[in-house]
Image (tube, rainbow, N blue to C red; front, side, top):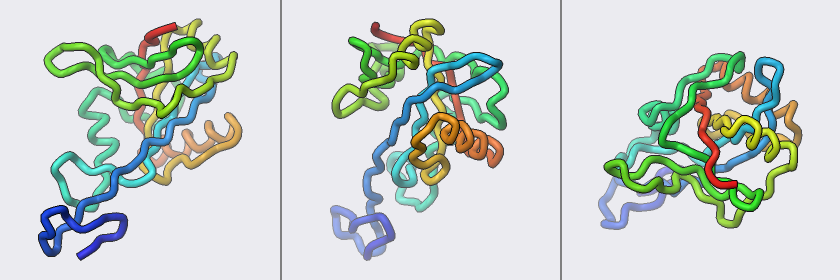
Length: 176
């Protein structure tokens, strides 16, 4: 048996399907908050995210991030709180990864890693260096979409926040 967006379970168990792996889309942009431009990453999966070991059809992306310390956002009126232990890795002016705390307090591990380092604009990099942090916003699949301009990205973030579909945190900058 198949489900929409799934494939048969590896053990061939009837009535069970394994969801296809979602890809996390990451967009960088500058977001105006409290009269100041802040570097931001907007993360949106390409498919619903289910809890590890779950075979349900729901989307647990935001609850999983909230469990990690991200905060629900109802409006983009202030900078979200810093999420200690998480960071954004910039090296040689390129975005490489979003890091999360390692197991048992060990070395940080990649929560998201670019297939190849992503170029960011000079203004984004300058804002990141100025603030020494990056705002990370996350929304479930279909909430933001690909936005070609920062004003349209902001509009999409505002809509997602107003509908209760946005979480955020300020992540310290790692690297150069």
